[in-house]
Structure formats: C-alpha cells, structure tokens
Amino acid sequence: MGEARPAVLVVHNDEREASALRVLLVRSLGCKAEVTWSGLEALRLLDAGHFNTLLTDEYVPDLYVGELIERASSLRFSPKVFVVRKGRGSNAMHHYRNLGLWTLLDKALPQTILASIGASVISERAHTPFIDDVQPDFLARGRS
Image (cartoon, rainbow, N blue to C red; front, side, top):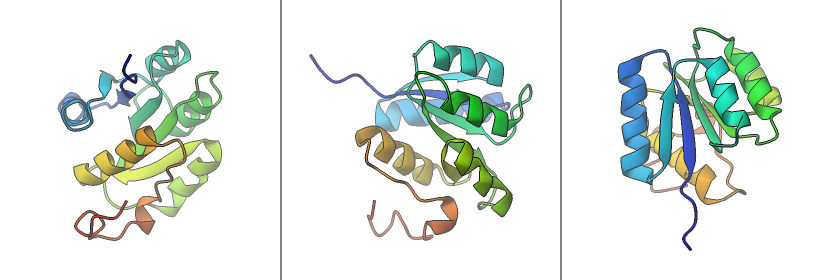
C-alpha cells in the first residue's frame, strides 16, 4: 500500500487566489487540497483529522489569524501551519511562531510556497526558514 498523500487545507478570503493555491498544490506536489474561507470551518476540519497542513492567508474574515494558529496548533491532530501574506515578513508576524506557526511565506512567490510545503510534508525533520531568511535566488541555486 502506498504512502498517503499530504493533505493541505487552504484558508483564504479570495476565491481566485485560494483556487490557484489549491491547483498549485494538487498539480505540483500531488497533495490532497481543499479550500475554505472560514477559520472556524478550518478548525472543525482540522480537528476531524482530515489535514496535516494548514495554509492560511494572513487575513481570515471570521477569526484573527493568531487565534487560528494557536487553536490549530493545540488540536489533537495538530497541523503544520503556514501563513501567506503580501510582501516580505514583518516583525509583527514573528510572534506567531510561539503560537505554532511553521513559517511565513510571500504569496507572490508560489515556488517558495511549494518548496516550503513540499519540504515539510516530505520530512518531519524539515525546517523551512522564515521568509526573511530566504535568499532571493533560493530556488535558482537549487538549495532546500
């Protein structure tokens, strides 16, 4: 029997961006990926054990993203949590690491999103640096 596919839950308030992320994850990484706009719905799905990775936008309409990270990280099926935002990381987001954030990603860099999620689902020991630590030519050099 083959290994189970990685399961990623995408939480995003923009349907077009959410759909694009889902397609990217499915086609490029072979992930099982679903989309919701609701942080509360995401917590329900995560608690049921359907997903091992959470990819959420910095803005979630019905829940403060810090609360989403903290609550998701305390579930019995605690997922790796990735936050996407516009632009490079801010110092304000670094405190989310204490709440369970795996890494912060720039939504304008889809290859970095794929590399980060791919590394996390391939190896439980993988550590993906915060976006501030990623060099601009990260993928061009072929480093992981």
